[in-house]
Image (cartoon, rainbow over all chains, first blue to last red; front, side):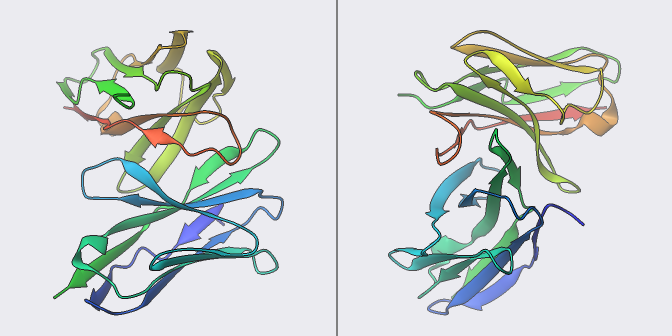
Length: 110
Length: 114
């Protein structure tokens, strides 16, 4: 089993839709969680951290479910500019070694 | 700050040649990471440094790969000899500290080995 797994998609949604992605991780001792966004042929950039209590940033909501070992990202009112690949990152071990998922592709169409 | 700087942005080389990728992290960042990204395997951590010291190189695929960080503002990833399967995008990233710190990625080096 891979350490961090994501549904590659693509998720093809119309503008204004709500879409959610999940990311599962295998190491129950994982400590830190993030969502990054990567545009085509660009570098990954931090979208948001994922806190135990859940957190929201505008149209984006991230949640952590430690019992089931997954994190989620919810995007409301999708915009064309949200089209990208969304990577989850899990940090584990005493040295906080980062492991990236392979990403979920989102395509928002008019 | 200019962000993380990588060079070259594109490299095309023949199998068997030596390839050197370069990275300048953001000033003041104590951690530097080298990643490789391919369609098949996604983004893989190769090695990371803390205060110029290699901490974990378990992701380095084989002895053909080596990385150095002679000072806080410069790191290299070398492949010798290169093989077609090394073709990928190589990213360098830096962060202030581990744990909850954001990683800032460079624009990447797109390597093609023919």
